[in-house]
Amino acid sequence: MRSQNKDILCICKGRFLTEESYQAYDALVRYYKKYYSENYKVSKKLLLDVLLKPAFEEFLSEDNKRSFVDEYLFKGDVFGTWGKTNLTYHESLYYRIIEFLSGLRVMKKDGTILIDLSGYEDIEVII
Image (cartoon, rainbow, N blue to C red; front, side):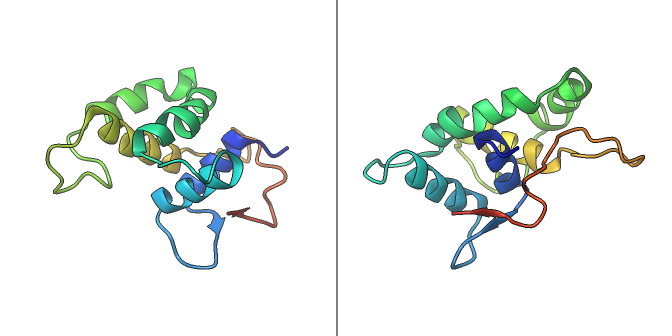
């Protein structure tokens, strides 16, 4: 079954369709404007609070907590932060959560489903 948190997970994994090519940030902004408000200035902190944090909380499990702490929270640079200086706490966390969500496995090698993405087989998140 589709949900907002699964939409956000798929966007972080690059599974979204638009008329043009966008980065995850652009896709999240368009998603926010489509489902929340077109008249609001969208910042990374807003995206973190409204879209990324709920998805992160849903998909963070006992099995992957240690991975998040070791590989994403205390890692020096993550994708999106390389070469950038003076990132705010929220900007840094924004990039770390996107990288964590983009790397989540939805299925084990033996076929065991970890995150049920039924409803997303034939279509991408359209924004």
